[in-house]
Length: 330
Figure 1 (cartoon, rainbow, N blue to C red):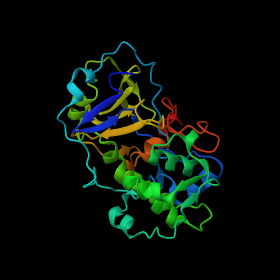
Figure 2 (tube, rainbow, N blue to C red):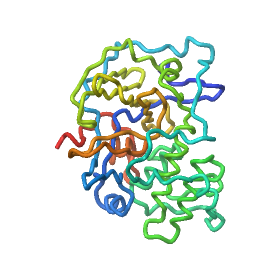
Figure 3 (cartoon, helix red, strand yellow):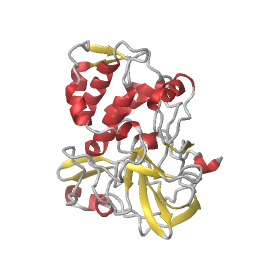
């Protein structure tokens, strides 16, 4: 187990695994999943009829350097680093939404509280759902795709914190529909409670202090397929940390981080820090034309890029480290 496999922040034990490093996105699903996304569950990243769709990849990242050095979290007693972490009392926020996506709809807390889940059966049948929907449910619950069964116990969901309640509410809202779930509602719940549920450091400085200081590690500048510009990539495969810094006019505009190895479900975790070094729940993408940049919601936009359709027969996973796709790959 690596030194970064387990760390404590403010008494909260947090496993470290992968994170959406390279602002991914996409509506590239096939079959039923594609139909569902086109019915309002896609990225909605459109401005002036120019769509920045897409699946954003890891820019042909070089093979990770096992020799890179990392912060030795184990050298600190209980890894007791005094850094501020995301809390669920307040949304993270970020740049103002200038384009409409599912997650840009405000007021999720009130919407969640208003959902009546009393009609849900003791066990909800999800066996007929497509792999995309089952995959997002599994990710929200931190359950391995291979272990997500055909039913979910309502009592377990309601006892599972804000994300568990979001799953329950999305199932209640989707009861009787052809797909059996209100998928946009679940996306909104994941967007609202993912970062605080994982207890990520609120600042990039805090991440460097508590998790991994990547500044001394060798990096590569690449022409990014994801952001259509220069990106500085820093990797440490041994510690499961992958960093991508978007460079514009010589300045770091965004730092995206993938963490691998700390989730119970074997998927990646995804973090985004903005130009001010603040943890953010959204990422900026170029349009494919000359229009303005658009915003997409994290972690969902990252997950659509790092999606692994082959992880389980009926449930998508989100553990693909090196997808080779993006708007500028066309």
